[in-house]
Image 1 (cartoon, helix red, strand yellow):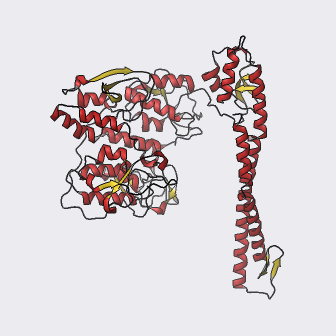
Image 2 (cartoon, helix red, strand yellow; image 1 turned 180 degrees about the horizontal axis):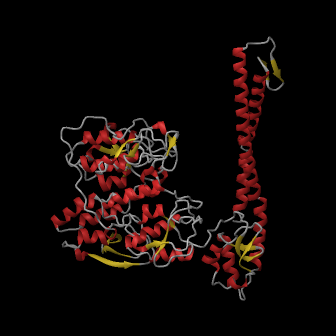
Image 3 (cartoon, one colour; image 1 turned 90 degrees about the vertical axis):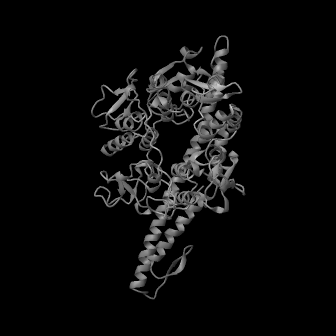
Length: 600
C-alpha cells in the first residue's frame, strides 16, 4: 500500500521494549553459491526433483539434499536433469514447509498434507513485492484485525508461506473491502524488516512488539532508489569511515538493523563533500550495491557488501553511456569481443555471487576507452545478461552466459521503427533489416543470400522493417514460394513505409510541437511572475502615480506598466496551455497511431 511518510531515524518503533525480549537471530553459517536454493525463475540446466502425484511442482537440488535426501521420503521424489530452457523456481524453502509440514510428514509417515499444500500453493499468485499489484490481478489480501497495524496488507502468497504457521495468524483477517481498480497495493511482508521482525517476535509470542515495529517501519519514507530526494526530508545514515556514502532510514532498517553491522554506521552529519548538496541518493537503493547487500545477507558474509561499497566510493561510477578509467572484466572461457563488466559491477555482482573464477581482466582495453558495461541496468540487454548471470550462479557454470555474450555482445539491438543514421543494414531498398533481426530471423533462410544489402553501413536515415510480426509472416510466405520470390512482400513493405511517413512521422512532429509549447508556456509563466512581482513591489514601495494601466483582452486597473506586462504574459501562457490541453492534438496522435497499427 502507499504509506504515509512521517517518522525519521533508524529505529521504526519508539515504543518501550516488551518485558520479554525476543532472542537474537541465530548466526547463519556462511554458505557457498552452489548450495543456494533456486527460489527465483531460472532456465539454466539443472536437476529438479518432483513427486509422482505432483509432477509439475519442482524442488531444487539444494532443498532436496538439505531436507529430503536423508529422510524416509528420499525415494518418493525423482530427480531429472532438465535442459529445455523452461524457467523453473523452487518453492520449497518457506517456513510453512520446512518448519511445519515436513515435521508433520515425519511424525505421520505421510506426505499427503505436504503435497496438498504444494499443489494448492501452485495455484496462488506469488508475492508481487514492493512494486505491488492492481485489483485486476485477482490477489487476495489480509490485514490486522481491529486496525492494529494501520495500512498493512499481506498478499495471499505470503500469508500461506509465512503467516499461517505463526502464532500471530489469528490476529489477521481477509481485507473486508474491495481494492480500488485504480490503486496499487503492495504486500508489506515483502519489506525485509517486517519479515525479520515476524521471525523474531513470533518465537516468544510478542504481538505488541511486532505490531509496533511493523507499524513504525511502514511510516518511514520509502527509498528513492535511483532518484534524488531532498536531504532534509529524512535523517540519513552513513558508514563511520565513509561519510560521503549515505543510506536512507528505510534501507538501513531493512538491511543493517539486526545484521550485526550496526556499529559500523552512524547518523549522518555534514560532510565537506556533501555540505552543499540539497538532494541525496541512497547508496543501498542502487541496484549493484543493493544486490551486493542481498548476497551478503544470504551468505552471512558482509565483507562482500563492504567491498562493493568501497569500490563504489572510489569510482568511477558505472555510466550507462560508457565509463572511462574503469577496470574491465570479461568471461574467462570466451572473452566475447564486446562484453565488458566494469570494476564496480564486478565487485557488486560477480564477487558476491562467488563467480570470480569465471571472470578475468579484459585484455587490450585502451586507457582512454569508454566501453559500456553490460551489467548496467540501462544497458539494452541488461535483463538477459542478469538472468544468464543468475543462471550461472545457481549452476556454477557460465556456459549459457558465455554463449549469449559471444552471439549478442557485438550485435546492436533492434530499434524497431526508430530512424537510424550511419547504421548497418541487410535486405532490400524497400525493406531494410537490422543486424539483430537478420541474425535471429533471416540468416539461413531461402532469401538470405538474395538480398543486395549484406550488412553494409548507410549514412542516410532508415529503420528496421523486419521486427514486425506481419512482415515476418510475409517473408516466410515469400521464402515458401517455388522459387522463393519477395516481390509481394517488398511491395507491402513499401506501402507500409508510406503509411509510416503519413502517420508516425506526423505524430512525432505533433508531439515535438506539444513539448515546445509546454516550454513556451513555462517561459511565459516565469515572465508573468517576474513582471507581476516587480510591479507589486513597486506599487507597495513607491505607490500609485494616479494613473492606471490596461489593455484590451488583458484587463484594466493596473497600478503600473509592469503589472500590465505580467498580466499580458499570463494571458499568453493561458492561451498556450489551452492549445496544449485542448485534447485535439492527443486525439489526432491516437488516430495516427491507430492507422499505423493497421499495417504494423
